[in-house]
Length: 462
Image (cartoon, rainbow, N blue to C red; front, side):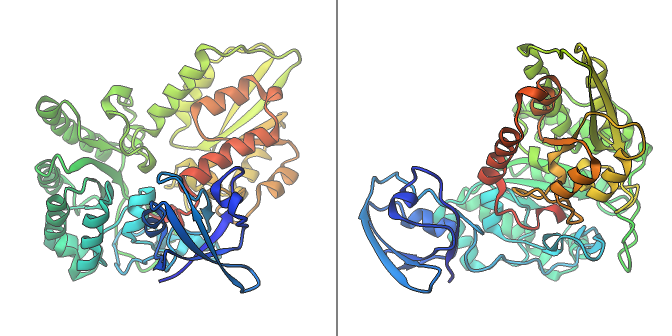
């Protein structure tokens, strides 16, 4: 077992009332040891609580109190799991962590494969390190939905792709989840020449047969960096290959929509951007079930932008220029939005940044480094301000992948710098820059990060 270390105590919370402070350790609840915040949540469901706490000086204190049955402790922890993140023991042929440059952020080298983080934060798991007690706990605690890395339903191929004989247990493991009534979202990392073509057809068909427990199936292209030393030989998708995948998947989407009213299987934005084809409409994503996996991010961004644009009063008294930073792949989407933006005295320059750190084949905004962005924005005449993609910074912190801080970037850049995560935030910054303080912009971003992903360690490599 372990203990939960307090990171933050929100104002007016039960934790604040009890006198808890950052650094305190929650040892047990009603004599129950705690493995993670799941155990804590179930234990705190009681009305009479004995909370064993260890303070920073090593002194332990028992806090006994009564509470409402649905009242939560209201504290944030340094990690959602108290006994250590369960690591991945696979040797996947497409593993992104194996392609990370040396001397980067420590969390980039963490290979997590923990079903608890899957339930809590949507991390994808292969289930190759799970045993009987794990499946029993999932059923007993009704941990649903989970997020499962399937990749293929050909078990022999899955063993080759994941590099472990335990990969062949997927069918039995999904059967266990189905029997327990556990729902799950699945994903396929599509690798040309391995799990595509006819094998992809069979995987889609097999996962569709697992509905309603199987909620959705996402297909993302394999990501390759220039640091693929001693790795399985893989090739990236090109325009023609991306087009073929889109046409193949669209046939399954049509079949699924006729049968269930939903597409069920969805493609990552990169396929449409690589192929130069229009993005699906918002309704084609059926509520964006895998948005955090890059499925429909571009369309959702456009929708957020358009909604914000409907009621926004815009205009500047004096000339004001802003440089918007993004990855290469999303640049056409951003440029179309910016071209349609007409604001008095506002000049917007879009700056797609090529990824020299990981290699030019990596084109997403979330993997841009501070050094690459800084080099790009220093090339031409300076604007008044710069807007960065928030996804390029570590969750909840102002640090880039190469450990450059936002403060250092701002100082070297010599301009006012802010970040945006959604289309609505970008539109609002562009049209109301002077009305949004640095503190307000940062707090809005922090709250999103802390509530949704403050313990999502190593998520960049998944």
